[in-house]
Structure formats: C-alpha cells, structure tokens
Image 1 (cartoon, rainbow, N blue to C red):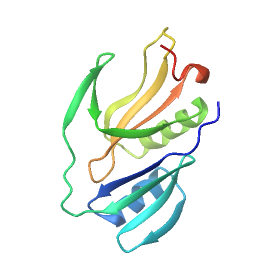
Image 2: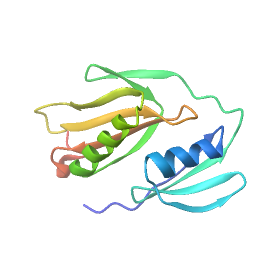
Image 3: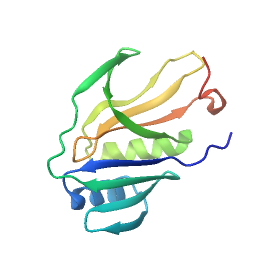
Image 4: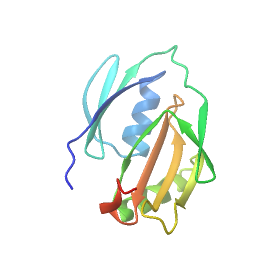
Length: 139
C-alpha cells in the first residue's frame, strides 16, 4: 500500500524549541523556513510548525484499550524496527511519555506498538508500528 504524503500545519510557542525537538530529537530533516514557520520531513510527510506564542494545547483524552489517549494528536506509522530505535532514543533522552512505548490491541487485527508524547508546545504525537502493516485499516 502506497499512501501520498499528508500535510499538517500546527502551532508552536517557540520555533527554537520546535527546531530542537523535531529536527534534533526526532531527527526530521528541515525544509523551508521563515521567521514564523519551519517545514519538516516528518517520516515522509510535510509538517509545518507555525509560531503562535499564545497557542494553548487542548487537554482532552479518550479511553483506548485501557489508556487515556490525548486528543487531538498527530503522528506516523513506522516500520517496527524504526519505531523501536526511535522509542529507545526517546527513552534515552528522558522523554516524558503520555503513554510509554507499549503494544495495544494484542492479538487483534489492529495490533500495534505505540507511544504518545508531547512536543515543547504541548502538541501530542503518536508514533506507532503495526504488527502486520497490511492491517492498518482492518476492522
């Protein structure tokens, strides 16, 4: 299955902190930038951090497989080995996880490794890896 890249623009309170997080910690290559925004290659997708000093993250969760999942959130589905390497890098960096690296929906068609964490502006991210990538949309 080949999916086209998505585009997401989102607010950040500090571009320097966003650059350190997305470019440094997550290792996302930086694309174009300006004094008020930065493009990133987010695992093959285009995300744009837009400066919005007054932006406040929303604090809402929904229960999913025994965890309180932050809403809204965005992320990517990675190959399992890439997900594991990123989880190890985030753990080594002392990342405060909202939901630590775990497996959910074990034994079901949607079984996946997942982790949730916040960027410096409070935007929630989920990075996951499917046990069987062909079942990403399985019911």
